[in-house]
Image 1 (cartoon, rainbow, N blue to C red):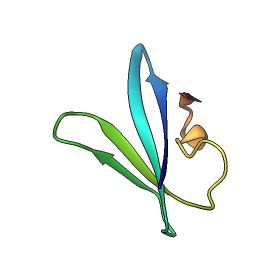
Image 2 (image 1 turned 90 degrees about the horizontal axis):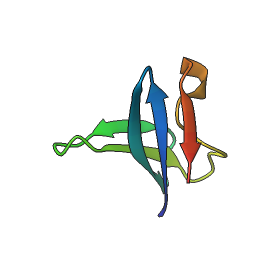
Image 3 (image 1 turned 180 degrees about the vertical axis):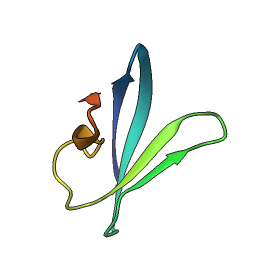
Image 4 (image 1 turned 90 degrees about the vertical axis):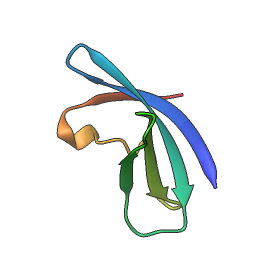
Length: 61
């Protein structure tokens, strides 16, 4: 598994997230009990998997 961190901006709010790549076919977005956001993406997915099609701006660090 590999991991990246990033954030997306929703209005005035900045939401940090962690990307975990796993051997899977679909993407999963989970909000954990501590309010952290984890995105599980397929190993072969390229680039930032974080919803650019939904009008969010995101940055992966």
